[in-house]
Length: 106
Image (tube, rainbow, N blue to C red; front, side, top):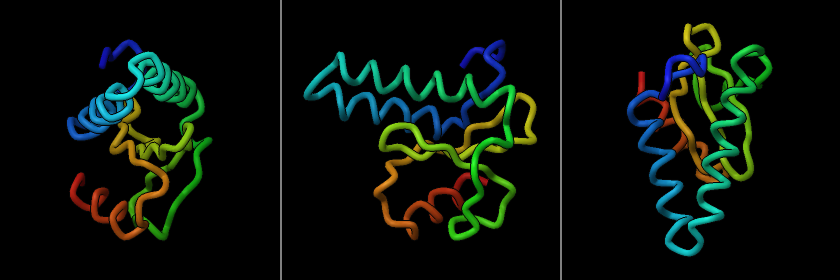
């Protein structure tokens, strides 16, 4: 991602966004692009207010914050400069799976 946007994606978070797009695009490329834009717009909106998201102590003890966009949960480090997006996960995943994903991206 462009550093001028005020955020950067962990390499695996960038892959998350690509996989989300590919999954949706298999049925509807236009909808896939809209979802991707919604995710990126949400990230841009978090930059000036990084602590706006909520904590999820059930998923991680790290000082991450979480924001919801459509059916997806964005995990990010609010104190990183630029803002660091750690993961973009489907919100209906098992909390145990989400916690494992976050542990793997320390």
